[in-house]
Structure formats: structure tokens, C-alpha cells
Length: 275
Ligand code: BTN
Image (cartoon, protein in one colour):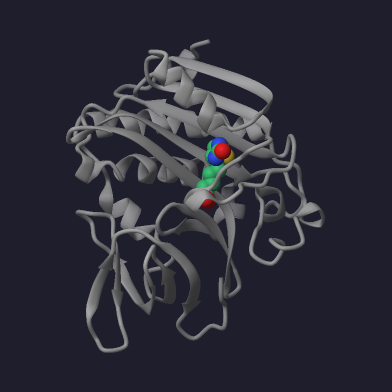
């Protein structure tokens, strides 16, 4: 089912298909299969719950049935080189940040991005995860023939239902709204509209790297980053606007660009907060 309302802004890329599911294994799998079967971009699957929800680095993504936004979007990003492929999940994260701000209004003042593609809420000195972005692509030469970008967002999930092991590091839009219910559909509609605009720009070779860099909570934080091979600590001084890498100044004063990894700790200067 196409839905013109989500993609009819000038310059925005339209949504070709939008399907809602009660329960699926993973919306990533659904959209990957659609693309493999020839579905045009941008095709979108949304689920109330997932039985095999996946996060980055092969982690399990937990949801609360009917209270999490679980959505994957499929692309054929012919205009993106491999070097700029990171723009796609970054644009999806920025579109979601805008959608959250539009939905919550002033309640979203503490919501921002955490490198590489988490969406977090600042809570005093600590950083609580609201959403994560997972990007998976099929390379073909110097391009991605297809890519699936999935977002899991804790929307209407009350704190008393948070899993015990995550309760100290997660939050939800409902909590940011002071316990008031928040509609998943409102966030989804705003995200899809924004995503169409961001993707339209990417297809024209434009990405607002400055907006992405400015939204990173990690900038100015003492961080501990786990990469595939090591754990690096240092002061995050920013992000490399060409590659999307996190730029760290280590204790010996050397600047290092970390292309991928997981920020385990993020301590803001002068505050005790730790992620
Ligand atoms: C992360 O923070 O590690 C990324 C989490 C991505 C979860 C979403 S939920 C919708 C889509 N389907 C999945 O199985 N994963 C993504």
C-alpha cells in the first residue's frame, strides 16, 4: 500500500509501500525480502512486536508489544557511494530526532543523538537510550544495491515496565511526556515525512553533515568506545564530517578517528553522569 501523504512534500522521495504487522520476526527481514523480490524504494514495514528484533552488533532488540515503534525502510540508494553510505542511517536518525521533537514539543528539549546512531534523552548528568538505528546493506561495486534502515523507538512504554537490566539506561517518549500516553502513529507519520525529505536530498547528493555533527551528545564528553578490536578512551572532540567517524583526543594528546564502535561510557565534563 503506498501512502502519498508521507511523501508528497516538494523534493521528498515518495513511500512506495507501507505495511503494518501485528507480530513479525524482524521488520528488517521483511523489508530485505521485499527488496530481494524487486520491490521499489522506499518500502516500509511497521510491527507491533518482534519475536527476533535485532540491534547493532548482533544484539537482541527488546520491545514492549504495542508500545514500541518498530519500523524498517528499504532503499535502492544508487546516488550514494560506499564512502557516503553512512549518510543513510544518519539521515534516518535526524528525521527521527525531528519527529520526536515535533511530537513532544518542549518535552523533547533533552533529546539528542549519540554517535553513531542512537537517540537519547539527557537526564541530569546521565544519558538514557530512547531509540537505536540499524543499517544493513548489500554492496555492489562502489555502491549499495539495496539498504534497510530500521529504528526501534521506545514510545508509550511506562518506566515500571522497563526490563530490569535496562531500566537504568533507557527511557521512553511517555516518560519524557511526564507519564502521558504518546501515539506511535503520530511519531511514525512525522518520521516518514521527514525521511522522504532527507532521502530526497541524499538522492540529490546533499546531506546536512553540520546538523548531524551538532546533534551529537558525545561532543565534549569523556568517552569509552568499544571497537571490534579494542577499547579506546578519550575526550570526544567531534565527528569527522567526511567519514562520520568519532574524533577522540586520547590521554597522550593524539587525535584519533574511530570509524565504528559502541560508546560505552559518556561522562560530561563537570558531571558524574555515565552511560
Ligand atoms: C541498536 O540500537 O542496536 C539498533 C536497534 C534497531 C532495532 C530496530 S526495531 C525495527 C528493526 N527491526 C529489527 O530487528 N531491528 C530494527
